[in-house]
View (cartoon, rainbow, N blue to C red):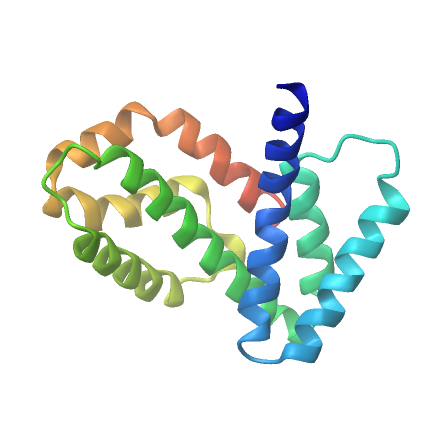
Length: 166
């Protein structure tokens, strides 16, 4: 069981790195492979024998992506990660509610449109949740109430993602 837990933890740590690669590869495959290699090399050089945390992963991704295209790749990555977080939360919370995957997809698109109008690098967790509320509450008030019950947890997750963005 301990080995399964370790593999799960490692997989969860790699997910943002793989999403970063996929997002950039859609635009430039060589750049994506190069940036992935830089991230992996940095981890290998600086975290040998240490426990890597989700905050460490975000810090490394930020350091690598902010140097490319004047931070444009990091802004793209951040928008994508915020969408992933929101939709992940909503899918769990809406499992027994009359909310369809199509509606959740629409929320994701609308959320991305709102994020595109914001300076993503200076967003706070509270601002992200305000944007989410404006989309979720009109669709299904009970879903928003469930999100409010978990607000402290969501803010902590957003802090990991956003703390290195300011």
